[in-house]
Length: 114
Image (cartoon, rainbow, N blue to C red; front, side, top):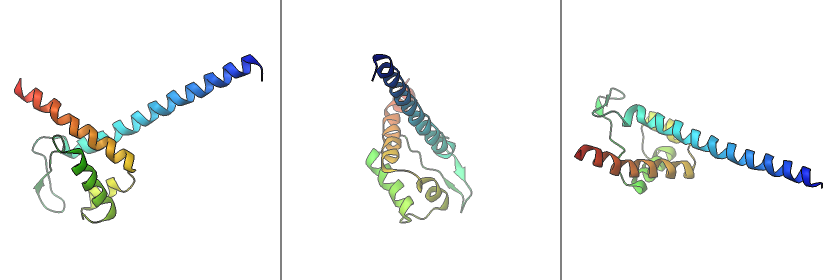
């Protein structure tokens, strides 16, 4: 293979890798936004299946969030909206979401002190 073809192949591989990383980041940001729609609004209440306060995710331990998402996905926890949201999540996505909300607790606690 000629040096120019090797260089082009390397460039294409690097560009594809950067695109995949950016795509993964965008997917995670979209999933976080989906969670924020209910869990990110202070004192948010929902009316399905009954009126109740939606739990805050920031401040929860990552292991707890992963465990809860897996329970929703398997049907062990029965809440139709959460089951539908958790069903397509991979274990890796669950862990990344959990890590985000576990670390968000420290940031929100610092903001409240100011």
